[in-house]
Image (cartoon, rainbow, N blue to C red; front, side):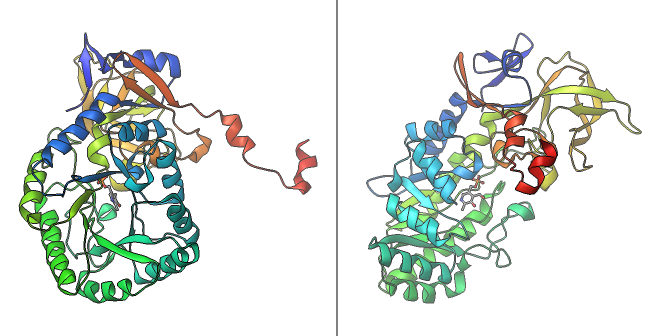
Length: 428
Ligand code: PLP
């Protein structure tokens, strides 16, 4: 459920009419709903209410990569969530948004020694390590700083998540984690490293999962590993079950599993594990909490269908070009008529295509359209390709809204490039 609804024929986000935002800020612009974020957090918490997770309850760490805007992260922090980060930049953003360091998990397949040192100095709650080489480096950094590193290995359970190949992470031919089959031996070597405090196990098999079966298969393997590790004398206090739960993009498709069903499965599979469970949801929390608002620049005739050319492009919303992602595209003021169109951006790539042969609200030059379910992996993947400024972002709560990322002036983009001495005279 989200808080983007039509009132008197005009799409609103909570109590704010989208045309008001467009008039004030221009387009393209991302618009997020606080109420929707908070509702998704509550629905996930309710879904997990029945899991055994020790006195502190589940540790829910929002996957910052899904939406790293500081105001969005501050909304998560205010709701008591931690953060799952994969770079020094994400770590600093989470801290700057008020996420306590001990609620932060540092994931990622290529952490550098400098990033590890920063994370140790700031006191992150857990490192999810992805290789034995990484463990050796962390041990060296932790020993040098005399700060014990609390760690888990991310296990690659060799399970097919059944999602798009580019967001599948739990098969043996993916770069992520250490193999399940050799994990026990890897933990034995891990425990012997100085500066390392073995704390738990972790798994994350992919994103936009629409079936619970692969998740369950992965969790069953993790449960078996926990038992083996304990039998070998390790103290296992945490089990990080990752993120990955899908969200509805296409209203004509079956709904992905809801958090209640997910929570029931987790409760059943993890009963008796005697650990603190950790979760790293991203898309589930923010996907349906954001839209990308755009204006139709013009409609051009096409061989099969008209081309609806928008002022938003692949640099603003990469998902359709990157992995054929489907976003519902709606008129902000629909007049009831429908047509079949190709929806594209102005970037000079044929891949700058949002939809082909799409039956949608009829729109004309100057109309506003909304890309639904654009709150996750939207603005965070934006680039300045074709020298287009980074997309601004707005956060709404009730009747209030605020710019949480200003439109970047093109001049600042140009000024960021420096001229070498031998070219400065030419330009002056
Ligand atoms: N945790 C890790 C390690 C990830 O790589 C990701 C994203 O792929 C997530 C959590 C969040 O996934 P999602 O947004 O599908 O919940």
